[in-house]
Amino acid sequence: MLMLCLSWGFNQVAVKLALPDIPPLLQGTIRSSCALPVLLLIVYFRGVKLFVRDGTLYPGLLLGVTFGIEFALIYHGLGLTSASRAAVFMYTAPFFVAFGSHRLLGERLRSTQWAGLGLSFVGVALAIGVPQANVDANVLWGDMMLVSGGALWAATTLIVKATALRHAPAEKALIYQVTISIPILALAAWLSGETLTRLPGPLALSLVVYQAVWVVGLTFLLWWVLIKAYSASKLSAFTFITPLFGVMASYLILHDTLTPVFGVAALLVIAGLFLVNRPSPAVPIPADPLLNDIET
Image 1 (tube, one colour):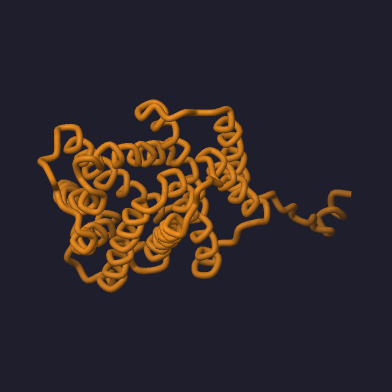
Image 2 (spheres, rainbow, N blue to C red):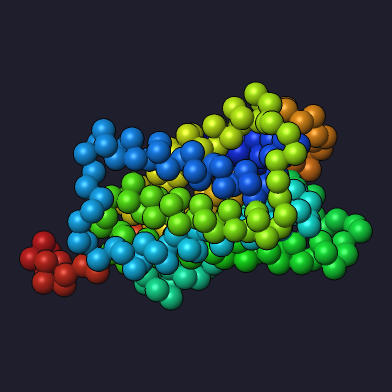
């Protein structure tokens, strides 16, 4: 999970660096289009059987549509609000996962775990720098799109956990997502009037390859493997680390300014994750009075 969060944190910087050559929705379309053959190669070499009757067709279609709309909202929202605010509102997803896991999967979070989620979110907000001044209606509309994207991100996690996709290969779930997201993102790009004004340079192309091969083709695949095996709410809580890595990458690559507040924010996130992932207290087993009498 730490490796995934590091990769996803840098991915935000990769998207920003490629924006001058490739608009956001087109960038997402190209990313999914390039990731699909990578996933098909993985399926071929691992011998995964995709075309079997396993009850995943309808959940898979729902998963793909949800994934496509999620990224359309996120990319479009980024055009209205700042990247820092976007990171905060997008990472409301663990709250939706925790609530959905409680309602749909029967996973219960203790009060300390809810407090841990709260601490982590406060840490992320502090690190990114919200609240910010000069927030108008357009920015708030973009914020709502990012919150909606976070909710749909949580929905994809819950769909996999609560349907037949949980027992299907992780590659199959991701192929549903990537394949169906291509026309959705392409339509969104067309409706937004996005076009390529020039041939993308080597940097932009290499960053899109990074997103397609590593981020979507491999890290998303590993994410689904983990989601199927471990607690959805606890794994989702780890994603709070991602924007912290994104801030660090922005500092090292984009030369953004870091303040001592970042250190405090990191401590809050770590403390929150500790509370979320701390084992449940052991319940003592009552002694058998008969055994006590025998021992006496």
